[in-house]
Length: 219
Image 1 (cartoon, rainbow, N blue to C red):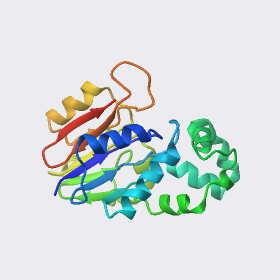
Image 2 (cartoon, rainbow, N blue to C red):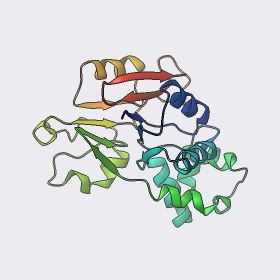
Image 3 (cartoon, rainbow, N blue to C red):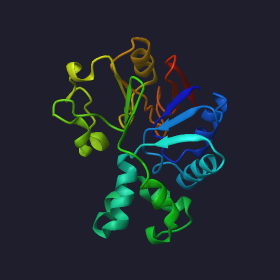
């Protein structure tokens, strides 16, 4: 069985599907998505529909909650938070549902997002969206850091992490930086190349195989 990790699809369903095709993703494989499936890109609904399709057809897929999913959930639960979501790419998500109202997004999409986890421990890997506070007694209790923290070195503790590796997204990095981090087998590896960024060395969707740390950048 092979295991793949993708992060920060940000509404780019075309790249998402191309990535799965590139690695010949099968039902016997595992796929982890490290949050931010939605917002900024033009087809957030399509990304979530692809997830539904994979699950319905027996594919093994697990999703982690990103800050953009959190903003969406916050917005439906508290209208005062709606504007923060909209100015951070939520407007594009509404457009993908052909509506200007969050109340018109079918409830099954919220139900799906509410199944997303804050972190996953898998073999010698810890998978999160943003970072992990390794300096407190229970790092997995700090949800804010797992969803929002951009400085991954801030709360790093090698004694706690030991021989495990932390894989995260959230913080767009240049392609070369991601490649070097993987090549050097760093303890903390970020795989977000900023699918929505229109500048050199960014703009790809990164898919990483955990067994051999083989990486593909899908443009």
